[in-house]
Length: 417
Image: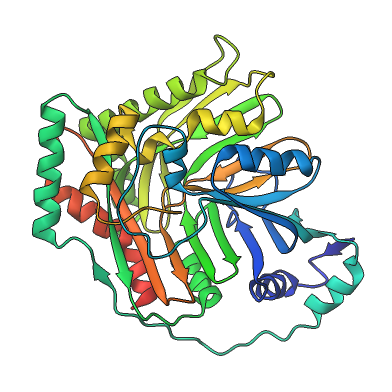
């Protein structure tokens, strides 16, 4: 069923609200960012015809094989790394998302070019249920007491310890993360997501309801996508604030693009991603399509590079994702040692933070973001969490890294307090 959005101008917002009330649902919203690799502007998946909570990639692969030629939505927790490499995390996990989780939706809505396609056995009934919904115009005020796992002095001391590991030659870059959290938090997850998406609209925004657990995501970063025979990864490394006007924006962008430190961070991860993609590529096809591209978002500007290759046809989609997981922009390099050290220095299990969320489509493609700039919420134990991180290199200044973390946390803190 096709819905002409010009005739039903409130249908999009009603559909989002309708989906958010279901125990299993998700919203993927590009916020109208131009993207050469996007399949849609917005998609909404409602209800689960089938689902899985998995502990490893093989279980996910089995689920995918049972549901070929279907849309499948879900995510991979960062801690799936422990099933791939000889690493582990003994840190506490208060949100408790599954290590991996996927579902085949009962209903799917795909928005593109001012129309919505409803894919459902009961498309007309679903349309009427959504269209007859009355939107609540009341403003919902959410306020929770947010705390930090690291105070400033402890953070700076830890960064200096990481730099000592770099000086010893154990690693040459890491992504060090710290948690902000709230206990006894009572929020309306969808209303918080709306506020977050308004404060920080990004091309890989997502809302997920998974029973009593919620992901409210304002991610600007693509982890990996497949389009026909092509694989695409777009790591972010390099951050600077937005200017107060166009001239200051341009000056800051130029400073970011010409920063030796930021270039160093970015090129290290580009090399890591090139190496990871090589494991899934046809020989000689890995290339850097764009290096040090400056992209503007509402809160920050980022350096983003694009690495592509032609997929080895003998590999499955899950094998491709395993070969590049977890994403280099959130680990550091060398990857395994960096993951091991960050598990030691960080105080909280990352869980879904710095994992990936997205979809597999019926044509064999897929697209997953990097779960950053995101709120995780467990309604049952009323625990709310979000984490931020930055790249630590030999030349990193601990004070500046701390300030970068606060800049990345700014939009979420404004939404929650």
